Image (cartoon, rainbow, N blue to C red; front, side):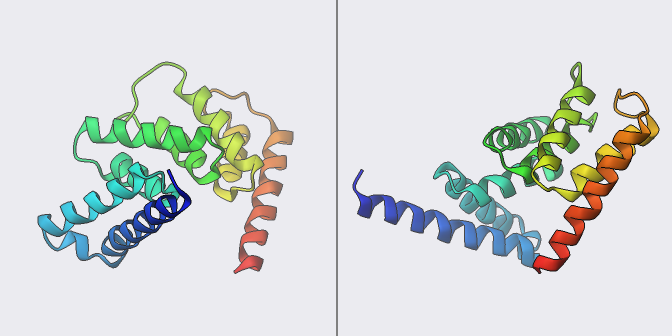
Length: 168
């Protein structure tokens, strides 16, 4: 594929993402089933072109707003793909999804969720650090209560939150 074709593909994916995400963020996609379907189609097309933000939005929409178990599993698969590539937001959302009984029913989900929370928190995701602080502080998610780790993750949450507020 030539560099011009790659540029065209990336440009088209960006436009498709912009249209789809705008329809969802503005609420217009909720006005009518046809608009919703059009927005999802645009996001899906951008996602298939490897547009990272489109993949993240599709994953979140399917996982948390999907109408069927198949939709939710497809969303989790997209989240897992992005999480494995190192995306902290996807790692956090995947951990959250793993803990939803209507989405995932398998063994060791708590252990997997903790691993994804840790991966996201180590990259500076504040909510992942907060979840870890609460889990260690309360002995949740299959973890033993550990006040030292709870304090550490609480400090990381505060640090990451300050970094977010100072960068805006």
